[in-house]
Image (cartoon, rainbow, N blue to C red; front, side, top):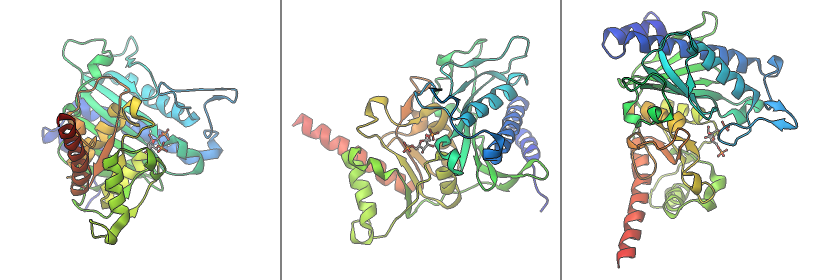
Length: 348
Ligand code: AFP
């Protein structure tokens, strides 16, 4: 079979009526920007891009109050610059910036809103572990010419597209327009993303889970119960052994799940309860939920379907349970069951 490039794939999707010309251009631009980010990450120490942003005595912090790496800043700038002039965007929002970025004066505007986490897992970059870019595309409400944060606050079910790029041993783009999830691998010699898997399916059952176990003592009771049963393996109620994998780059953990199944959890815990969770709804949870659901998996907060949440803030955080459907269902069931028992107890 002849290799199918991303550009060919986008033309096919337009012909199938899944996307319009503007969305096709948007994805091409994002993919091109991600190739530049891949070049920067690949250079590593030789490119002078490792380490923290800012001077040693005045480290930069992003809007999340997290220290910014140089590559966070570089990746953010690459994506902003690439998307400024094409005429396909109404505005964009980044995990690294407090407010949405408007299209500079003098450039045409389009109908789409782009949200991105320019470099997810950036605390892994200095130790040469995979990092990635995550993005989500929404339609700009009609008659809005200067989109503000409130115009981005649309449930994940309204996403027109979502994707991520993993900068690992190879650079891989995973993409959905709501008609399946597809994978493209960057051919570095040619400089093109080539379709490597069409219509990805995540197995419904799994024996592999990903979670930061160091937070165990802070978790809620149903999470303790669920993971306790996984750890008990054949000696517990689940009757089978589970293996654990945790990269601490969400893109890499999700890519493993999209490749061979598994479940990923970032549950609520006592340390992060006031913030609502660890991961960001608009930049991480919604796009990953769309990709995973389109591959036959499931994505919840442990209580609700992520994509049905009505966002309340651009930088809102939520708990995330995603991956192989049956396992997400078991963990979600334990949380809902505990909530019902608690509500019954409160009524008695
Ligand atoms: P960074 O981009 O700051 O490295 O955060 C990565 C991340 O948002 C996500 O990719 C990981 O799953 C998660 O944080 C890991 O966080 P902890 O190390 O605090 O568990």
